[in-house]
Amino acid sequence: MVEPIVTVSGVRGIVGESLTPDIALKYARGFGTLLEGGTVVLGRDTRPSGPMIQSAALSGLLSTGCNVIDLDIVSTPTLQLAIKHWKAAGGCVITASHNPVEWNALKFFQPSGMYLDRNGVAGLNEVVRSGNFNQHQWDQLGEVLTDDSAVARHIERVLEHVNVDRIRSRKFHVAVDCVNGAACGITPVLLERLGCKATLLNAEPTGIFAHPPEPITENLSELCDLVRESNVDIGFAQDADVDRLAIVADGGKPLGEEMTLVLVTNHVLSKERGTVVTNLSTTTAVDAIAHKYGCVVERAPVGDANVSEKLRTSAGIIGGEGNGGVIFPKIQHARDAVTGMALLLDFMATQDEPMSEIVEQLPKPHIVKRSVRVEGLDIPELLAAFQKSFPCDNVRDDDGIRHDWDDHWIHIRASGTEPILRIIAESSSANDAAELCDTIISTLIKVE
Ligand code: MG
Image (cartoon, rainbow, N blue to C red; front, side, top):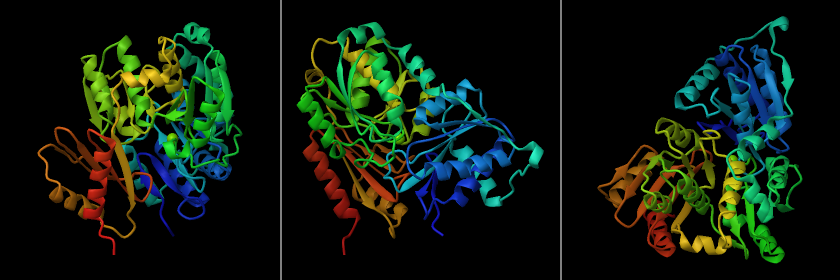
């Protein structure tokens, strides 16, 4: 049997191959056993495999005596907030995020709403491996409860942190690509509350993605066309579980997912100074913004779990990842595209110029990301070869290898969610960064 990929980002696999009802059941039984009968908030994105995996997870949790608050289809950040609201012992969402439709995953959360950390995942793996699950009798099983207010609470929470009247007065015209994912249930509601005219793309919650659900530029041509043709103020694209956000500026130009955090960081720091936290693969344009406001940037390994934890321990005020993930700790330590959209509209409402002109005044990412399939390749060997071939004095090795020189940097790491090696480079131009990536790939991966 093909095993799922198990990391702090969840238990992830291809449905029917590396992710089956048996696997979902096992991990849910393991999670319920660890929680010893506490309450668990459960939900899913819109994927067609969602009901099957969620039902298996529900069964596993109930069998261990956990009560389950079932949110059904919600965004991941909505579920994370609900965990805290209900003072639950944990949470589980069924989503493979930006992965294609054939993938799904179980993601597990702590009572704080943050992802299970490495120790938590190790503990879960241990219980699953041992097969030593709590198994309650008929009169000690958990109960299923429902909560249909989680989306409304999430929106109210976000609105507390923006100037609603000022945004409403601008009557922004916003185009949104919901990718037929969980955004369908929350994004239009948020925009209506903010007085925006919303033109929606792919807003049927079918889970049949109209394009690959990762909000990267190559997947956003339909949104770019809509923004250009309909003369809208801004276009937003989210992934299937609404924790990543990409922007298309007026005129139809995609800004690239790295720019989301740059813009939000600029807005948050302009109002209040504090530490910024991002990951090792994110553009140094974030650092340029932070330095403008006299603030520091700390970097964590890639992944919401890692960045959120560093934000918490460093009491940072804004953070996230260059993949379009915005983490605003005043709401929660979680990537949240709903919060990201509200903060960006809040920023636009303070500006007289359109987004296409605003970005011209900000530092720009010159970052290139490549990936190489790694089946049959030895990752530690590749990382060692990289270190040898591209020597550097400024090295970080807590998430793959990152080498920093004065005017460029390279990060190579194994993906936590797919069997690929990621190569990320940033230099003074995108062309230089692309050349760096090409050189690394041709040096490390010998094509036969
Ligand atoms: Mg996601």
